[in-house]
Length: 209
Image (cartoon, rainbow, N blue to C red; front, side, top):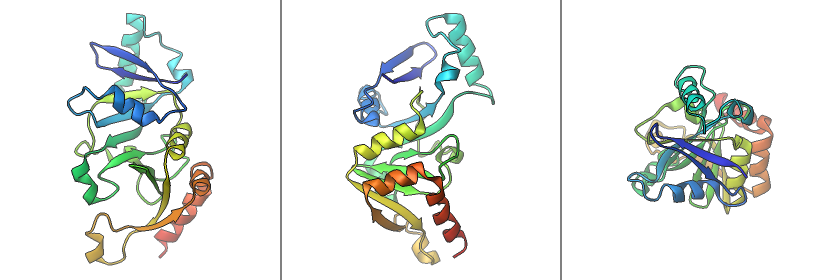
């Protein structure tokens, strides 16, 4: 069973996660008593890196905290949750759950809003944005790989879209939600997750238009 962890300095928590259920829904359920319950970061750490630390040992836990505050931190930002309804009118980059591959094998980001998933190889990687205005500061981390996390979300979605580009005119570009989308099937969405070349092809076409 995979885990999700939260380190609040004075309170270190480990949560069991059911990989067959909606992973983000489970994290949101964990957070339901928080003041800003819908907004958090989820970071990734490999099982190999995690195995170097014993969180039941104070010295090992402090060592983990020390390394995670450095440039060489084993934690890699993978997702951010920003589900505030009033932001939805601004478009897919301002609401929902944003997930990017921390290893940069898969371009861009996956956006989850309600029962929809939108894949955009054109947007920058989520964790490069560093936008603390859109997203909260509460950090969680997990050993669940990016591919498994997105596949979990795909299996709990009903509609799938790929972002093919932005409107060509400056006037249209001011409308944040007016992106060029193509609705696809579930199997096609899985291909965008597992075959990086498919996203690369869209990006190259977008850049040479």
